[in-house]
Image 1 (cartoon, rainbow, N blue to C red):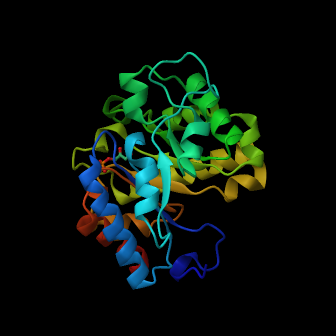
Image 2: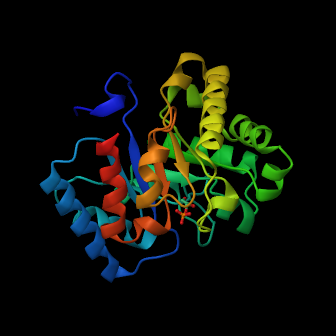
Image 3: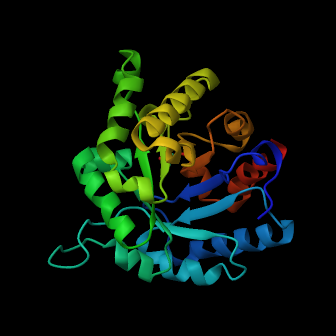
Length: 261
Ligand code: 13P
């Protein structure tokens, strides 16, 4: 795939991923076919587009994207392959439905379901087992940001949420400051730049030159009007978009921002 703009010399293909969270009934699949059509018509080549719908829609969503312009992911998985875990979904089941990715360690799961770094690490291992690429979320709370602990928190989450096998697998990191999710608040461009630089250094510390290859996405109130500025920052290799990914008319504007960089 020819990569345009500032990414031409780098090896990281930019990614725009939509996290639908617990939103979407069957009728919203029209958004997927619309997006797939638009991307096909635009001959979009500036980046890789992923949608993570609720698991109930995954299989149908894949079928709706008939031009294959969109890849799909789950939003969570269990660490076991199968068994007595009522209500859970394994990485293998997501792969079976057409997923290539899985979001892991999202702050909403860390907070609402008590997911620790240790649990996230086991889930990352499960993703590798099922040949899924994990999108591992990290991010500080407002309190930690105010106490100047943001970098420390995020770097420790990275160290403790990634198993050593990450070295031999594809991973994607998503930096999502908790206070920016769904609030309309966004860190300054300098704050994002600093955090992504620190994350890059941490990945290189942990995984040597492999650490240079892993995409680092920004997430938290990414919208059409701030996407271009955020996506232009060094070491920001794309975005993980919540609310603005639900409507194709909004999401496509964020995708198009990649073309303007
Ligand atoms: P919003 O874009 O709605 O702030 O959500 C970000 C997010 O949590 C993506 O995973």
